[in-house]
Amino acid sequence: MGLVSFIKNAGEKIFKSEEKREQEKAELILSHIKKFGFDTSDIRVTVDDSKVILSGTVDKMEDKNKIIVTAGNVEGIDTVDDRISVKTPEPTAPPEPEKQFYTVKKGDYLSKIAKQVYGNANKYNIIFEANKPMLKDPNLIYPGQVLVIPPLPE
Image 1 (tube, rainbow, N blue to C red):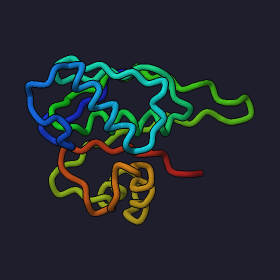
Image 2: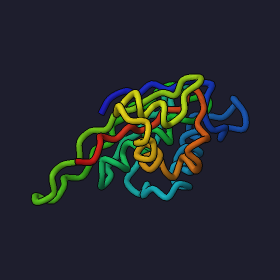
Image 3: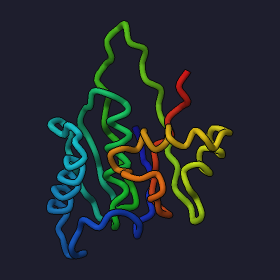
Image 4: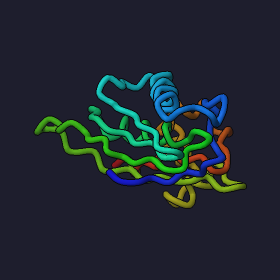
């Protein structure tokens, strides 16, 4: 939980004009999250200028992080206030570790990022898979985009 920063002028253009009221922006962002197949039945979205506030609960940490980056990678949004909690895992399942985020810089590509965070460029597919369905092609990332960087599988 906490604040996650994004680049305001980067991301998907879902607002047709800057004139939209906060409630309309919140509805558009929720619709944008839904289009990627996430269960949003217990997710609430509020927009305050360029900040998105996400609250509610999700089943898995993986879904929480993907919802955060989906909401933040929208043009006009520079902060996501994460107030989403993850439902308690079953006692036999170990809790999933918190994932980290990475903001794409000019000249970055997934294998370069994988080399930087994992020490192995060939691990780029782990980053790609963790960011599906927002990423449809590992070669199509852009500066300012925020990606989920999962821990290496054990």
